[in-house]
Length: 485
Ligand code: GLU
Image (cartoon, protein in one colour):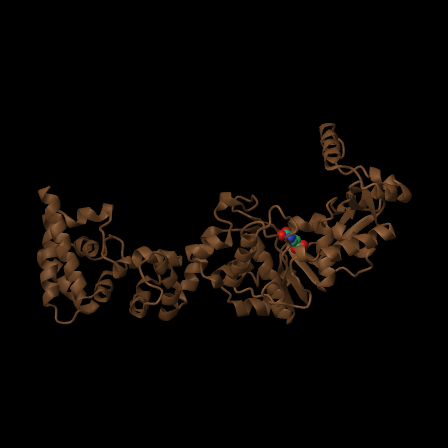
């Protein structure tokens, strides 16, 4: 199988595009075939180099490496449509010679006016095919005069074109309802429908797997294949992705850029697992599947034609499952870039890494995305600044008594291990006649700066005695200042 992902680089990679790329990749890997990346950049006004770079970075992050395409080489170079215009022009000339295409001299303004008029009058806004009737000789003469023209495909007026879709079955289009679509614009640039067919033929694509928003294009593409006497590839149109409200997934439902999920700290493996299930299932119950399982089992037979629901809660849940499955070292590695990004750690910091590895068990079950680790672990990497809504815990006679007493006992503690810290502090609150839950809060706030932290005693051990005592002392001082002022 030879499959391709063919993004138009007009913006970031959308999660829907990522699902399309993933399905193509899975089919290629499963069949031992090839996965090709082709950049469809013929829309010069909207395509950018940054978008190409960003799309490639997101695909790499998801682990969807391509066998042919930009940065990977391949015999069908270049894998960017702007470098392939000669091929499209050749095909268009051939269609013109054969009589499958004709020159249309209508100007864009005329076309727009006629379209708007038809819409106003409740008529058919499709191109009225008027230039079809211009005799070839006349059309050549007009061309010779330098009149600009577009090339249009001569769609048969009778009959039907059937798409045999691997997911939806047979979808029939009446030719009468297909417009004489443009192949080459009057500036010589190709349209999507022409370029995609020429490229899919040239790159020997066997299966076109793409979003079902392209289904109306497929009969047009089939007509071009037929006119060029080429066997079309198999087609599979993936179901639309909708939000939990049943409406097409959009920004209203949250973020739709793959980059957003990367930056929020989703693991690529969780993302791949989640995307795979947007329209496909292994059976009725399995949800967690690693990449190997997906590659071994993925098939179009089990892709549904019903819209797939994007459930953000499920994505968070799934990411948490993948985080829980990481060992200490893996979790430390995964969290590190987030601490670096916040300036809490240097990129090359072996001691910081060691601290992170020791902290991994404290956060593993408390975070849903990697970025959640930052507020939880910041206290290990910088001096604390007590959060606004936690300050109360450092004030009042009872809180201050707890802090004073804790400082004293922790100083005397023989071994600064979490178990010892715990038994000492528990004995202390009991002797003081306080409730543990409540009494530990001032200590937590003093040491971590927040009333929400990883488990207290383990956190204290990790931070070390010296720092704990310093912070408790500082909290007592700050509390005194507050009382004085
Ligand atoms: N460039 C098209 C898009 O981004 C690709 C469609 C196709 O796969 O044929 O939607």
